[in-house]
Length: 262
Image (cartoon, rainbow, N blue to C red; front, side, top):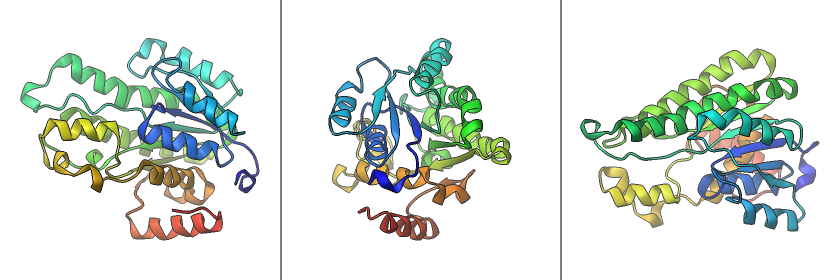
């Protein structure tokens, strides 16, 4: 499958220890990308990387703690120094907490959500900008229906994802003239640990969705693979979902052309 790509582009993905980030990282590595897996701590992604390397793919890990803004630039530069640049930045890392009413929200918890879900991803784009400029690269921001819909108990998550939705548009606005594209990926309700926390909260209608009705994260990995390709560039600046009819038709045609299976 790696032969489908003319050159091995370098991808940096945050929150890659498990869930959506893990699936996206594995899918890209297995399809011709060099992937920098980033968890919060060193060795968070060690087993994943070791397995991919054993299987003949190019993957490394470089920790980025999104909650610590003072070390963010240094950690980003360390990640970029591995292969000398980055072609695709995937802002995936996020927290759902605090799950509570606006009335009861605590400053410390709210501040952490703002750092992890909004400030850190925005700064990562800034820190990677010159590299993305040189390679006419791409940013993929993992967004959510919560970016545009208020949900009971999700003040922090909804507001910070809404802010990242705007950063996605801002990246397109300022980068498009230089060949930088920015896609907001809306994966839907995927079976992850985050969804487990949502179910445990019991606060809103999302918490009532059964585990067996959630999307397999491998599907999100394939959708991200398409988002990373030039085939999806026309959707730069937008938040897209494979549930959209126009998106789905174009995505499925590309998947078939690559001889991949949904």
